[in-house]
Image 1 (tube, rainbow, N blue to C red):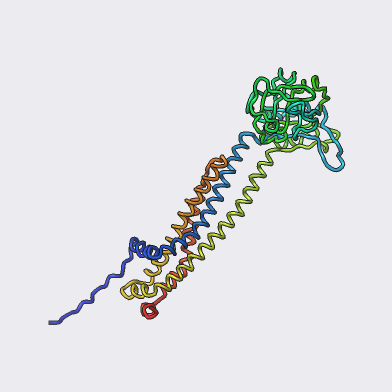
Image 2 (image 1 turned 45 degrees about the vertical axis):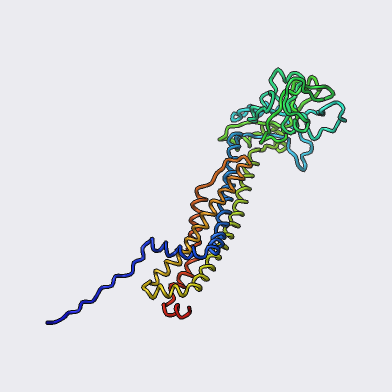
Amino acid sequence: MTLVRTAEVVEPSRFRFRDVMRVGSSGLGTRRGRTILSALGIAIGIAALVGVLGLSESSKSDLLAELDALGTNLLTVQAGTGFGIGNAELPETASSMIGRIGTVQQVSAVSSVNVDVLRTDFIPSGQTGGISVVAAESDLLETLNGSVASGSFLTEAAGEYPAVVLGSVAAERLGIGEVGDGVFVWLGEQWVEVIGVLEPFVLAADLDRAAIVGVDAAEDFLNQDLAPGTVYLRVDPDLVNETRELIPRSVDPENPEEVEVSRPSDVLVAQAAAEDAFSSLFLGLGAVALFVGGIGIANIMVIAVIERRGEIGLRRAIGATRTHILLQFLTESLLLGFFGGVAGVILGAAVTAGYAASQGWTIIIPTIAVTGGLAAAVAIGAVAGLYPAMRAAGLSPTEALRSE
């Protein structure tokens, strides 16, 4: 009888996902202090990225909401300034000429009044605290999309008699918060009742420091010969640039170069652009911090490979393959990056929420900041851990045990 010996088939080593996670996380648990410090570098970089994006979007959202409410179709017309122009003034017909342009929706002029406004008649003339006096029509508030904080604005009837409305800064400097019966200021050598205090004008800051009287009252009671100083107008939002080009020749056909047309909302747009530039700068700094954190993980993983040669050799001796060792250390590095990313996202979101709330902004944490932050942290962990993992996988069992 012939005996036939059959070869035993050895099943290949299996390294399931849960085994990868268990073995990969075991090294982190045994070196907690080192793990926390390594993850902290990634967390700082991710927190910087999330914070910058969150604060940028929160502030920009508030700014754009303000722009939407105020409108970007407001233009201001003033006499030009500069070399060769001299003391130019707008023609008296400036408002009416502008109103004839078909794309213009609203027009309201403001004229300078050459008198002082003081809290009492005991204050020496000239000590106005930087408060000017201007004359305006009753439609000024509507044209500027302004609002009244206390009292009321000039009506057609109120504009014919001595009455004054204070801008927000002017009211503060005069010590007037709310208006009511019996609130007066000394204006043009006579007592004039304050009938209203305005909210700040975002697109017409000069009026915040002004005391506003009616045109008829300025001419009849203050003996002023008025000429338009600034003309505010609303135009068709789709034809702002075209209208802007028409205005100088409409106002002063003979000297259009002496008419200056500006768009106040451009300042807010420029502010948003400046915030974007600063955001890009801080994003770059955050990326540098993230890069430094990645180098920290790489250093820690190299040290871990050196310290755990015996463990590597023993695992290789009992059947672990090079792939198993590679996955073990790569998983450890990925987990370091992931935990640092989670901590960074939480920290960045908390900083964004706290600061935005203190400024009264809408709290916005962009989705890209969260997902991108986590993805970047994991990617940094993978890149930082690849070389140490390959180095560990390249050790032979005998070499690793002999070095131990």
